Length: 212
Image 1 (cartoon, rainbow, N blue to C red):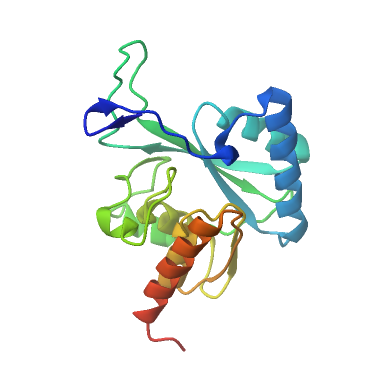
Image 2: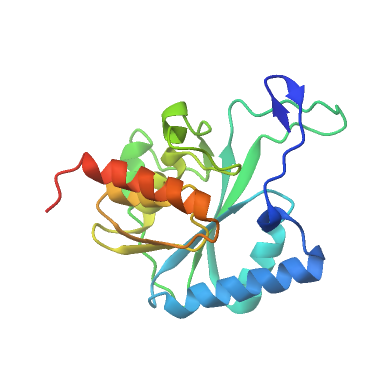
């Protein structure tokens, strides 16, 4: 990747290493099945990823009987440059929104999304900047998502006091978005250092709120 205009090697950790197509696919199916087991009948799931994995995720969702509702294109307005000059600059990620099954009567807060889009129907292309500096004050995660992205997903598909699960919590951005918008939250993270960052961020967000 590129940092400060220089090409650097980034080791994100064992969790980011490919298991090969079959291994990646079986792992994806396994965690999707685990999520669906605890989802309510009309619950939905949001999954983000780049072209390296998102098509495999979509196929697994379809095979398992989820109902794909939208594929959102998240546009990064200032992506890292393509230093190799052999590809188009990677400036997007895909976010899949899916219902628990084909009969899912999902929630969609249409009026709020229209309001956030300036009175027009919100489209499936979202331009959102990468995480701001203050979002990394307690530490950072190599694939950390911007708070604005997670807030939009949560506000679009849940109501206040509903429960949100993030099985790959990372630095806890989903939890911060939930705390900020009065949603309950359960997060899972296998790396103790990232779990510590997440807890600090969520605790900091809650400390500034007047809790009921």
